[in-house]
Length: 256
Length: 320
Ligand SMILES: Cc1cc2nc3c(=O)[nH]c(=O)nc-3n(C[C@H](O)[C@H](O)[C@H](O)COP(=O)(O)OP(=O)(O)OC[C@H]3O[C@@H](n4cnc5c(N)ncnc54)[C@H](O)[C@@H]3O)c2cc1C
Ligand SMILES: Nc1ncnc2c1ncn2[C@@H]1O[C@H](COP(=O)(O)O)[C@@H](O)[C@H]1O
Image (tube, rainbow over all chains, first blue to last red; front, side):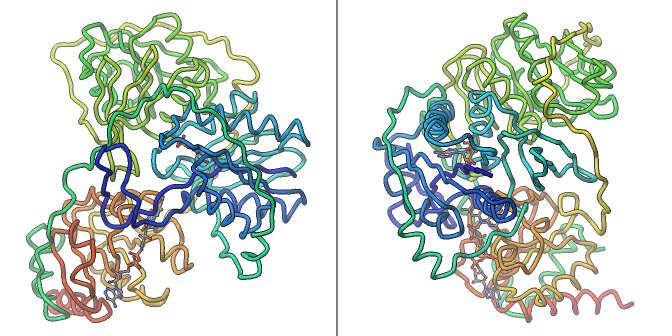
């Protein structure tokens, strides 16, 4: 099986969102970076499929040059090669622009070798949460797409896709080649071992630099929502505060 | 005209779809409000929509639409949109609402803004990012405007003296590819205990709980309060609790009367899941932890001592 997973580098924000002065981005000077947990699970799912059926896992990202770090992280947990589409502007790409760049890259990779049996996305990106890039890519490639998966298995060229719904799971059989998006919880991703991290350094990462189209979902500015930065009333230190806690519980009506 | 996709169950419109109607009515568009309903029970659900300002409902109850098929749903919405030329097409920012709208956007080659808290007919929207920890003001360049309404950002509202909408039957020209991805089976799951999403009290543990066994004291307190037990992502990643217990941006969103965060630092991605709580109590050994900037009350100290003390206090007051 040839599997491709699309991931996006995002800042690892802590307890507070701080914006840059122009309100176009999160201030990242003191932050680390990561990818969405959904996408981490997507890579883990791809690696497990390839462990079971043979094949290879490619990781594809569109991001700043530094996004190579996230690609290498994924190579360390079992992906075989990486492709980095370098965004050399400071500006964000909108979902349509992102999808078209990914589609061009997929088409080139497939022309050079064979088509991917499965292209895996996160259900939504951690930062912008557009809920659409995977679906757009599927349409552009003319492939079926199932989203929000909590279960996935492949047999005889058909992916059994499971979605969690109130009261149970909905099952969709989807013929390959297909596009899917997954949710955190579909698996518990492995941690990279030290030797795997070392091996990841020598795995190939190809680069190209696509042109950013004018966004059609144009970001004007970011705003930190009101409500952050209140200060909790400290009821006390240690177990002596228990009676006060119970008093509050009674006040708000959760104990009689 | 504004067109709204209405999801429905057992012949009743979904609450989130009624919120989408309220958001659509607030867009400053003078023209009528119309709805699309797909699948069995659509016509029954349409009857309630007059009270929410809908004058015409386009109903597709084709036999092939008996179970959910995202591309087929999108075909229905796209057909109505192409025929009626609305200024905007709006759906609920639910799992299916966002999915169908992304399909519609791909079919029509238009931009789509998911999870808007505000929208105007001039194309400007406010939408949520990072699960609600950040807002983005944006402009949609395209017509019709395609957007979904963030869950619980606006309340459903009714209009006075409205009749049931007139119903127009929709016979979509479905092709095979529209039905390639369709639900074939519903596997029922056993439900045990109080669900996180519905519980009046949620007691969550984070890294500070220390181990899977450390959750026993949270479970005991939960038993007394009829509460559900939740956790942070550090806990699920360590394998101490299943992901179904995770509260946050990539877990469950909860809105209990009381949320007790034990040994949780208060990362924005965790807060995204619990900020709907009426009251938040933090139990943390660090008086500087960011959770204190999101909580109403705090107790500073070791949760391994504090949680059992609260349990004992409740038992003392309510013997037996
Ligand atoms: C895109 C994205 C999505 C994410 N989604 C989620 C999500 O859905 N849910 C989620 O929870 N996280 C999520 N995270 C992870 C999040 O950023 C944090 O890493 C995580 O919430 C931290 O968990 P924690 O508070 O348990 O651990 P820590 O941050 O390590 O905090 C532990 C806390 O316990 C306190 N403590 C330690 N010992 C004790 C003691 N004995 N008694 C009392 N207090 C003690 C410490 O003072 C500290 O405040 C996401 C991250 C990203 C990037
Ligand atoms: N810049 C990017 N590079 C690679 N994949 C991306 C990028 N942006 C989004 N994706 C993928 O598309 C999914 C959905 O993103 P979105 O539509 O923004 O919610 C993400 O979870 C990723 O798998």
